[in-house]
Image (cartoon, rainbow, N blue to C red):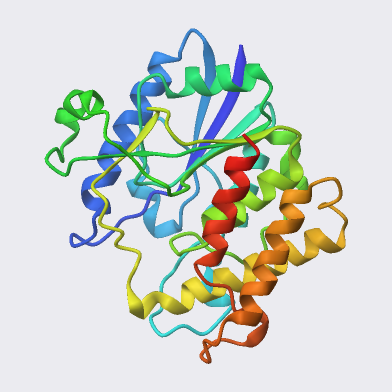
Length: 296
């Protein structure tokens, strides 16, 4: 029986946050998916949390050691937000799941279909050692855990965002994650860069009905949080540059082209509010999509 370990970052949020609605639904769908897989996949559920969020971790999750730093330890930001570093979360996943073959990280607002873990195991069986599953976006009409089966019945719409990552545990020690944080733009592309460069067989599954998100408000797109996006953008450029220097683009012409396009975009950009070295714009996102489609 394949062993899979899955970690999330539960948070005790203010009543104005969309996570007030999303998290209870996420927690219940994960519980149902684990129960569905009980006789076919050995699933271990883990939590990475700050001490103040520990009481909010749902039953059935094993708490890893409390997070003890955040992005505000690594920069000055207009609005102080205690956002975890992705490395701290994945380090805890790796260290706690010593017997797992595959590791899963999802955003805490991403709900699972009941057959999620079984399908992940089947995808792994085909030979993918790293992959991303894009979510479906469903209507905001349903907002309570007791409406889950109505949510499951909605096919929803394709969404291009990256928020569900699966990879072999053996790949993780090679990842370069820098000081990137969750809860800000570019984090999905930082994770995908690592999966692409460190795996033998990688895929983004764009149209599977395996995960969903309620609505598409994109609440993280707040102008006053732009400096967090800029921070992650810089980290992404640095990680790509390191991989290039280490020769990990060898025999990967599309990844080589990807970095070249980023560098061209920096030279073309005249956005004076950013240092020239880090001028990457939406062009980066388009090039990543081009790479993903061409590798299918």
